[in-house]
Amino acid sequence: MIRESKVQRKTKETDINLSLLLDGQGISNIDTGVGFFDHMLSAFCLHGGFNMELFCKGDLNVDCHHTVEDVGITLGSTFSKALGDKKGILRYGMCTIPMDEALATCNLDISNRPYLVFNADFNTPKIGDMETQMVKEFFYAFAMNAGITLHLNLVYGSNDHHIAEALFKAFAHALKQGIKKSENSQVLSTKGSL
Image 1 (cartoon, helix red, strand yellow):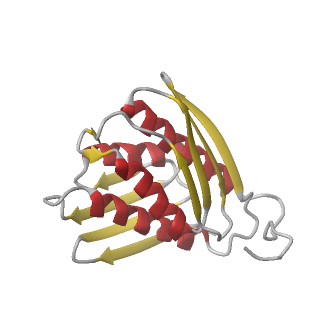
Image 2 (image 1 turned 90 degrees about the horizontal axis):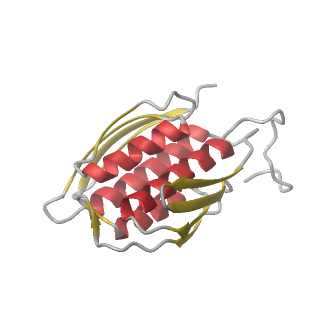
């Protein structure tokens, strides 16, 4: 079964077209109008092995908030739709990524119980054209709309670019682990469903 989905989401603030293939080769074509965000999403696809086409036209004349948040909402819901009934997946994923002086960890549970724990501080208000506050907002939007419990922790780091990149890469590797198919075709839950 091919695990893929396409979603269009249009509001007064953003117009998003997104297609996602979970079992891909890490190929991406991304244009959100926010250069650093595009860089992080490209790294997410490459390290997660996800193929993604994403085009977003947002109200960047205001700031990048609506664009980043709405992409998180759309990507989270697209991910959930592509994953389907979640039967036979490993469900849990964890990864620690070093990025030069920065070290970040991600632990997640694809559980249908959305939650975010985010412990990472940035030193500057922006990385390129992306506000550093929006890193947490992206992960929150993704977790709530994908239905995952997501814990992201910065162990240490001083360069904001490295901090953000370590978080996105750890997330990608943990997610790739969580969606892997196991030999068991059942839902990994004593309740029988997630």
